Image 1 (cartoon, rainbow, N blue to C red):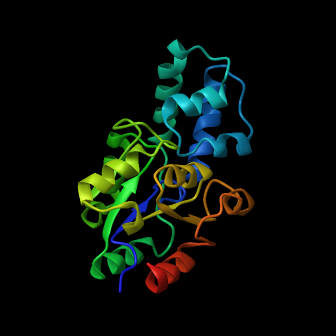
Image 2: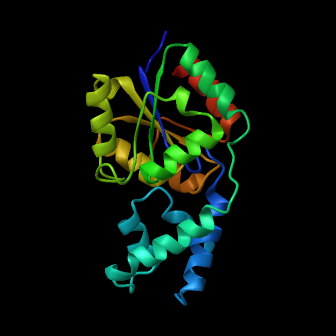
Length: 215
């Protein structure tokens, strides 16, 4: 028996093991443009946010007119990176799909960036839909999830949001959607547990087991 019809996954730090690459590329981009280089913890905090919110946090004194230059520099570095999935991710997705769940993504990435990743990794076939930060109001606003609810014709009780950041959990709360936290990504277990998700799992193996038993 399925408890949730639709499972919505965050991408970076939840399915994709990309947190380290994102942090390094943000730091390098700031260094290239002679901007203050953020500490790793500060850079990790913005993973999952939309571009403007992320840059306002990382470089609060940077004029908005310079955001595009920093974003372009970051993307140039990131496109040279090779990022993969956490072990066991694809088999987990295949199993969930076989059980009849609808799978979706809600991410701070751009649509172009997500579609590139899905194509490179051959994962697009597992997901019925996705929402990206350049398609609607980004996290922690509820819009990604409310739009997906409308598309799948489900209510909040039939959807589960799975993510590795407090931004994911805040978005779920704002949409009245149940949230599940994964602790192998950008934010600490302590910060995630403080948001009171339904559960907090350590890695993909635990996530897969939890979803098989409770999803």
